[in-house]
Amino acid sequence: MGESKRDKSLGIKTTGLREWKDRRDQYNRYEATPYKALDRLFKYHKLSKDDKVVDFGCGKGRVSFYIHNRFQIPVTGIEANPITYEEALDNKRTYILKANHISAPINFQYGLAEHYQIDYDDSCFYFFNPFSVEIFKKVVTNILFSVADSKRTIHLILFYPLPEFKRYLEQHTPFEMINKIKMPLTSDKYNKFLVYRLQEDI
Ligand SMILES: C[S@@+](CC[C@H](N)C(=O)[O-])C[C@H]1O[C@@H](n2cnc3c(N)ncnc32)[C@H](O)[C@@H]1O
Image (tube, rainbow, N blue to C red; front, side, top):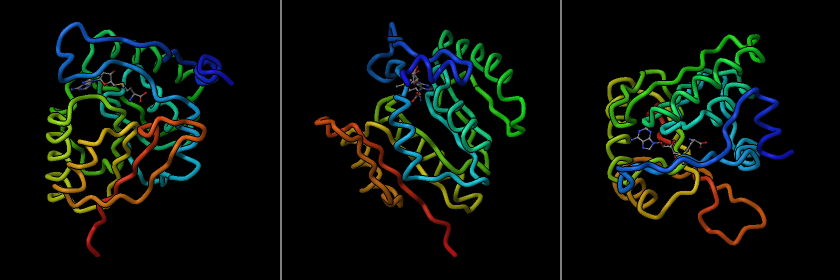
């Protein structure tokens, strides 16, 4: 099934690209994670019913809707582009007509990922190349402060991880890589997911 058909089955519209007019050096364009990639990620990495997911730079919300629909867990999407954010809200209106049997909340917040106040039960953080590594460091620092205040096991999922992101996590943070999920039939070495875990001390 193509991307538009998958969208249609969720009652959403998430295809296309949107470039930033300014801030291009720090903030990356909108482009959704392919459904085939999400299918592959969650074949090998399962979310638990107790997880609460944050998609940093959620765009029109594809990953948020996909996870909410498949795992029926709370999801929050953060988006800094006002037009894209409005499209995520439009999608939510049409999505809930199809998903009103799911009681877990799905929410979108307009704003910068680096300003998002991490919730003490947020446990899984998704990044598809939303911004520069400098901003990524700020977001990860916020996550680490939150875990220091409220101990818990958390995961980071990176799609299309560029070397500087991987280097930062592995050399400057306590996260350990627990899974590498490559896309089949591609010669693009970045076309993969990396899953990192920070385990609560027992
Ligand atoms: C590559 S898209 C990923 C969309 C979605 N996560 C997915 O995988 O389908 C990155 C998104 O991050 C947004 N973005 C860029 N910088 C941001 C920031 N500082 N805070 C929040 N969103 C940001 C962009 O506007 C864009 O919609």
